[in-house]
Image 1: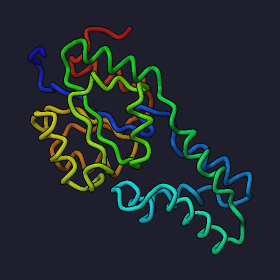
Image 2: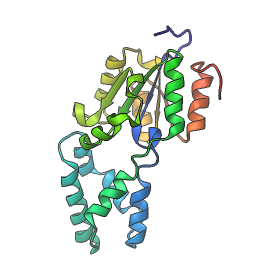
Image 3: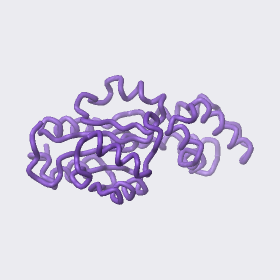
Length: 212
């Protein structure tokens, strides 16, 4: 791998909402169909029960049962567990622009990594060939290591695995809390908005020779 001359020598991406499409859109749509408050399912996904899924303490099946019971108890609306599972699975679509960016960075000698808060059940999907795993210098999955963003411990583990100084890592996440957590740990952290802006940021740091 080539040695970088600039201050940044590695790029790390969040998975859901960065390498993939918005993971919440299907849940937002389903809440609308059931005439529930728009954020009903999204709020659950951001709550303590799903945090247990992301640290491997709770299975996805157990979480889905909780989510359905919770909505029926609080709001009196029956939720189809299979439909809710499908809504979550709808977010498992990789952005082709991000796959292309990973390839361009790796071919230019940039260390590329992934840091994801994820369910252990998702691993078989993202490791099945939908992402260029061989291009990654490090992958840190919260459900595997038992700690999730923005806990400083997971950023420390990332730094260790990718063998890079924190300030020399450019990190993209679509959740401001995680961006802030990464910045506190010394990473060069940016809020992800869209693939083009992400690529342009990499260009500004001298990591790519040109914008296609």
